[in-house]
Image (tube, rainbow, N blue to C red):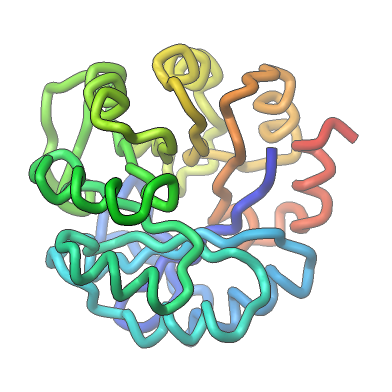
Length: 242
C-alpha cells in the first residue's frame, strides 16, 4: 500500500472540507503547488488532486493549477473533480495525469464511462463516495439510497478495475477509518481500491495495513498531513508495516 497525499483545490487554494461541506473549508496553502511540492519533498510517491469547484459545477474549474502540479512534480498525479466529458478526461490525460478519477459521470452516464474505459483503460478510476454506506454524487451534494457495494459490482461489469472509496462522514473529521466498512468494500472490489476518510494518526494507518487486504492499493490522507500529525515518511512506513 502507498500513501497518496490529498490536495483539494477550491477557488485556487489548497483546502480541506469537513464531511464534504463546502461551508466548512479550511485553507492550508494559498497556492496548491506549494502543498504538492512539499509532499513530494517529504517523499510522497504519488498525489491525489481534486478540483472541488469542478466537482460542484460539473466541469474543470482549476485546471491551470492541476496542470502546474503535474508539470512541477516527478511522481504520478491522480486527478479528479469535474471530469464529466470525454474531452475533459482526454485533456487531463494529455496534461500528464497518471490516472483520472470519475465520480458523478461514471454513475450517471454509462456511455461516457464505456468510452473512457475503452480509450484509457486502467487509467480510469471511479470514485465511490458514500455516506452511511450509500453513494453520494455531484461533489457529495446529492445523496442516493444505492449501496456502495451494488455500484461497485455494476461498474466492475462494465470493465472498471480501479476505485477510490471515500467515507464522507469521516472525511476531514480525524475520527479514524471505519475498519469494518473497509473490509466490506474490499469484499466487493474485483480489482483494486484506494481508501479515503478519517485518518488521524499513524495508528489508523497501521490498523488499515493490518487488514492485509490485497486489493487495497493505497490510502489517501489530507487533513492529518496538513496538520502535521505525522510526516509522509512516517505514514508510508506505517502502511508498509515498519
